[in-house]
Length: 167
Image (tube, rainbow, N blue to C red; front, side, top):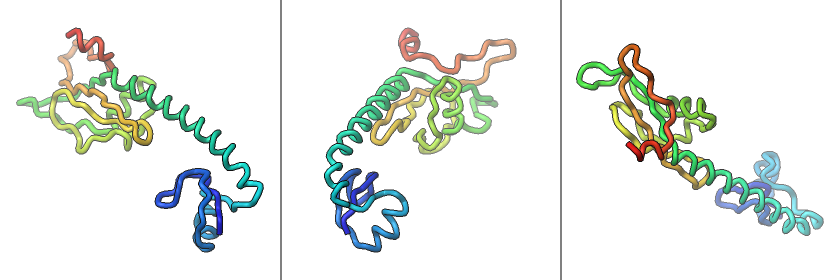
């Protein structure tokens, strides 16, 4: 059975490819999940127009993702933590904590897209990879500092990278 893919399908093809698959695979998987449509003659003729429109949209999405990645690389997130004797942290800094700080600054990044291997358990500066879209990844600088003494002003949540270079 010939079908036209509506979305990219692993090990089968990209969106708007004309592929030949077994009837059961098409009827039980691709068609119900709206991953493909039957390849009628009229649809075969429209493939090229649809493909161009899709590619233009994907190019816009990739450009937007690159812009966001560039902005993220210029940012620096400061997270204040409670510290005990010997600079020992209470708890850890997780991807969720970083995502919450970014959300306060207007960047909606899911915690699953913040790629730290394990929670941060010590004070310091860390480069944390953030997956923005597909293959686009940005390096976010995360400063983990101890909470200030009472009456001290808290560190800013996000510091532009230019200000860090001045210090």
